[in-house]
Image (cartoon, rainbow, N blue to C red; front, side):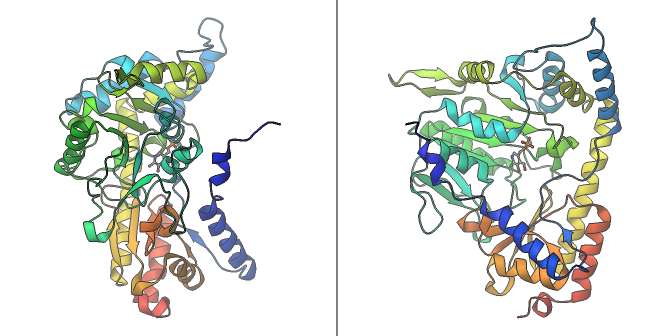
Length: 417
Ligand code: PLP
């Protein structure tokens, strides 16, 4: 008889978003007149920039002509895109990468989920808590997480709580992990690490021989000068860190799909004989075997993001989202709520008031104001007592949501406390 991978059976159902949608549907069915505003999703609402659309059309036309037609491309990505990334995203920050250190893909979600495959099955993994669930679930699937306890923690994972008490800056792990996932600017908390705070992790990883998997999917949203955009801005990071980037939120590619991973040649891990092995050739091997490359037309579209026009257009969209974030921050603060994030990231993280749990707050927001957000508990045990709103909604929806909050007055009125 065929056996399933039992690790998959350990995964709890995708409870968070299905539960949100169940509750929202039930409420809408009972109140068909209610105009609900969804500020819970992490998807963009602005269309692709015109420069990207033009590049897509041109690339499609190339595919119609035998002379310019492209079949299978390099699994690692076309050099026109890799060179644009090196020149625009890294060189201006003093980071020199060679072309074969960048791997283009169709998404940071699959990259962060797949990368663990080239690491030992018994590696000890540390995650910040709350966390983007893909880091945890992909390690559960690989059998590294142990068992899920009643407190919502996996027995073999190391959790680094990020709460208001530590200003959402994780402490260094007490127990040495092999692998450490860091995501800054952070989803869901919307907070970031400054140079010296990130440098502590790089130093720790170098001293303890750990690997940092650094998710920089939201780097384009950084507004403040003292926040690193890439982990390679920190000295020594090339030896211990792999970085994940995405065009999804930066340029509206959530549907088109393009991302990349940086695997510097110096990053190494030990084999069974205790010999140091570079990860770059292993990731190359993995990609060339299991992946056939991001479509040519999509890579052409991504390259258009780096043109002068493309840069101006994506900047305008990001600025618009960050203005939404500022509106949300102000609106919530005016109703007496404690707000975090939303300054260098499109996520606003708020403390649920009056010791309310995050699902009770969800219900108040839904039933009293017709607003939908995401309960923090869904992102990990330390997310309990918090709530996430996103700045990706349209401007009108965001303004309408804040109008409802302002008119409802202090939270104690509409939260029924
Ligand atoms: N990393 C983080 C932290 C995210 O929040 C997301 C998407 O929400 C991703 C990665 C996925 O990015 P992509 O659309 O490139 O798969």
